[in-house]
Length: 273
Image 1 (tube, one colour):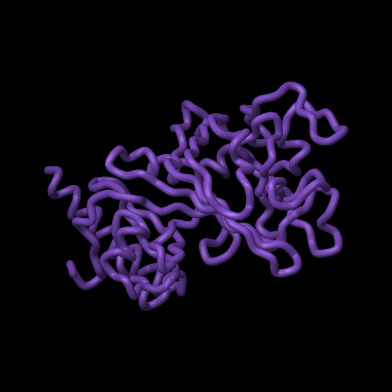
Image 2 (cartoon, one colour; image 1 turned 30 degrees about the vertical axis):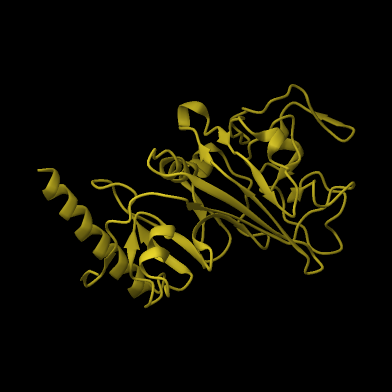
């Protein structure tokens, strides 16, 4: 029976790929799928960046993600900001499920990220890429990244830091996710500069995040144009890189890759390869 269910999900994945291709959502080359982007890159080193179908568990429904294929592996993107649309001023249900266009600005969804990172046979690295308004770049990487489940408010867990942007997530480690309708931050009241707010989400422009005393990072607030991006409490902040006045980034990207795990099955729309 379990074997039958597995082949049913496999057939569903093929249909999902073909439908996405017909609508132009998936490039012709990006028709492989596997348990995550890291596995796809490992077994198909020439696979380009793009939208792929992954299936983390047998018997579970597959879903689409954007894979950033880099020389150091395949990374599953779960947040991207580069302009003001879509709005990230959203409630818990939206952040839990995900929203936006996978090829552009989007939030993959807390449930998907939690499900991917909870697997005990894999460890995950989180990478945060930042772009300022003068073409400067910085990055932060964290080992042992994972999210708790929804009953734990998708609590953030990050390990050792490396990079050039600074360790802005450290004071937000082990805090739950907050949105405008779910307050799980680590303060009451929350102090942002000389402003006191009941909840961090209000100071941060309504963007959902893992707020620990409002913290040193918040990448889901309001997007601000060049020339109007300094001094706002509601921007895309990574304060260990741009200090001391709040500086809103031009673009951000959050993504993850698995460090180890089985690479036993990756499929192409025409069969196993």
